[in-house]
Image (cartoon, rainbow, N blue to C red; front, side, top):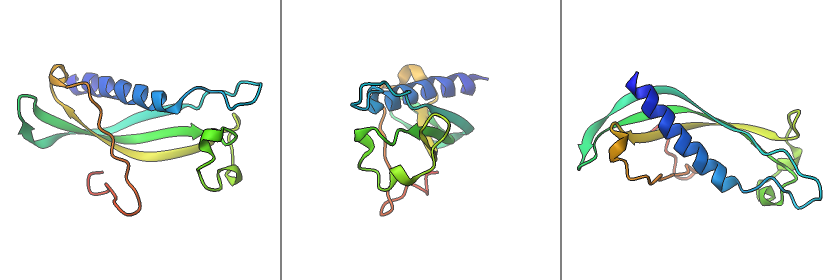
Length: 129
């Protein structure tokens, strides 16, 4: 199906963006740590109402992001009580989050810019997801 190809292209762009934000796999110690894993699965694709300028129609992709966080990594020190969380066999703390992405149906008209809104307790994007 055409939407599967568009969804796959969007997922690749998102995962590349997430990986770029994660930095390297060095935690400042002499021994290298395994790189945290990130996986995005799309659970549904639906038309998004309206059209938007020359880009045209959009679609909404909903899914789940599954990932890992490395507790000894100093960049993760800001995460409260991370060192108290259970770890998997790789020594990582696992997480799961809902995701929602809007894509142009015709990806050749996409600008190449990914806008990311992180929901917070005060301002949730739950109405979008």
